[in-house]
Structure formats: structure tokens, C-alpha cells
Length: 239
Image 1 (cartoon, one colour):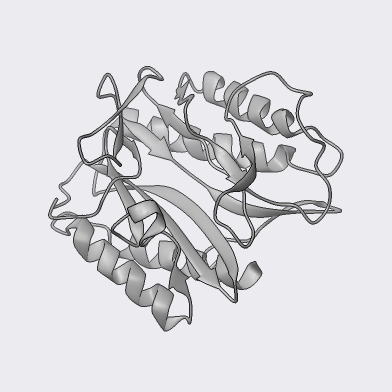
Image 2: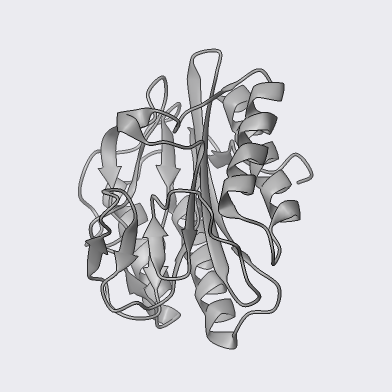
């Protein structure tokens, strides 16, 4: 899991450096696949249930599962990139949202609030707590930032398969669900918006957008529950 996580972290760092006005999301996908394969890994997403690319590239009001293509990034966009990799039979999965050049103050607030929600959720993930203690902390952190929580999508377990039980919602009451134990590997991934929580899926059958066209951000890490809390497995190699 650590090996797969290192690949994902390296890919996200390469993407952060490459994201700028004038770059297409298809070019970013090509870069991601090159880094994954050069590190001896396999893209998790490519071919998964028919998904056609190695990353999800979701721009502005796109929440998740955006398909990379001819879209050329422009100044002021925000781009959520989600990356998965398989190495030695194990999976890593992480996401981040990146500003394309200078972005609005609202976009900055959204991105900062979503990243804080992720960090709060990870801090809450430790042996002996209930699964929904994570969900609750993510939600109250989002509410404190005056952001809305997407209800239909959330985090998940991960291991030899990319999506394993349990499903981890980003909202709800604490004290419910299974109790976490050391050795568990989970993906915590808040998806928040500046508007409402309602979503719709585009005609491509993949891209999920906010129903009100408000901006959305998405952050994710694969974590390991240890005796001391949660270890992030998908950090950038520079961290």
C-alpha cells in the first residue's frame, strides 16, 4: 500500500507542477499515465467499469469523474484531479484541487475549506472510534467554512481493490458504523461546493456536476490506521 501510495503522491505532484493556463486535460492525463508506468505501476482508473482515462479531471462545477479531453485550462479555473495506481497488487488513491493561475476569493475559500475538512477527517480517524465519527467531523468542518457537502459520493475502504467496504460518507451523526482498528486502510475524500448539494450526471455517463453550477472542490488521501492515529500513504514525495 505504501508503494502504491508513493506512486499516487508522485503523480499528483507532477500534475500540480503542470497545471497552468493553456494545458489540456488530455495532456495532464498523458503525463499522469507516463509517471505511473515509469514507476512500475498500473493506472487504476483506466478501464475501470469502462472509464477511458488514467485520471479524473473535473473542472469548476464538475465534482468528480470528469473525463480528460480537449478542454484547455484557462486563468481562473479550478481543477480537481483524482489519481489511482496499482503496484504489487495493491491500490493507492488520492485527489487534490488546483488553482489555474489566479482564482477568485470564493474559489480560494472553497479549496481551503475542503482541504481543512479532509485534514479534520484524517485527524479523527484512529483506532477505537466509529466510522461515522470521521463523517461527522468532515461535515462540521465544512459547515464552519460555510460550504455544502455533496451527499451522494464519499470515501471508501481500499486494498487490493480500489473500492472496498466501508463506504465513508462526508456527513452524518457520530457514533455509528464499525469501530476502526489498526491496519485498516481507508480513503477519506470530502467533496464540497459553494452552492447546494444536489448533483447531476452529464451525458457522457461519468462526469458529475453540481445541479446549480456552483464551484466544487475535492481532496483525498489514502490512510492507514496505526496505533498513533492515521498515516497518510499518498503524500507527495517532497513532503
